[in-house]
Image (tube, rainbow, N blue to C red):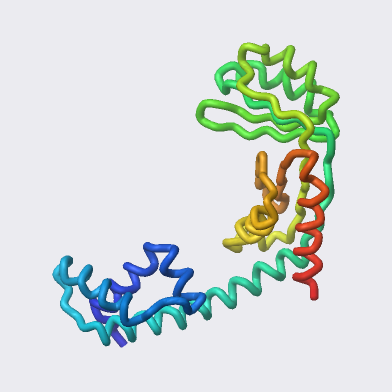
Length: 222
């Protein structure tokens, strides 16, 4: 059955506004009031429809959203349930100017590549190196203090290793980071490397962050 232009416009209106999608999913929307707002918006775009038609379209959109959400939530929980986590402590996060680091990259990797922990992320202006604390002094000497933007010490990485499906499933990282944010945990850095998700936070919050993620995994396995 062909979807009417008005129905398509209503769906586009809702899907382009994440807060509306969330309200529809949670069932906290006054359909009639929202339908009146959308009718006025559509008329400004030259689309004539009725409040009743828009209201019915909103109800159908909510049903579709719930079906998709239920399926996606199940996939996310399966991935979380199959994940394992480990801690890497006593790390530092070094942020430096990219142009200063790139010419010295081979030398830097020779020094820090064998460290017990090493992660490198390149941006357009800066470059971030997360590395074990014991090689910090050698790293700073190579890069040069004038080329370093910021150094964060006393950092801890929580490495979550998940099944390969994580690379094809939207929302897993959001699900994980939301749990941390809801518990007041600040993420210093987050890196995704195929099946591994590396979450870096201050050492003072590491124990709490680990417990939150451990409980998330345990809950998903039930």
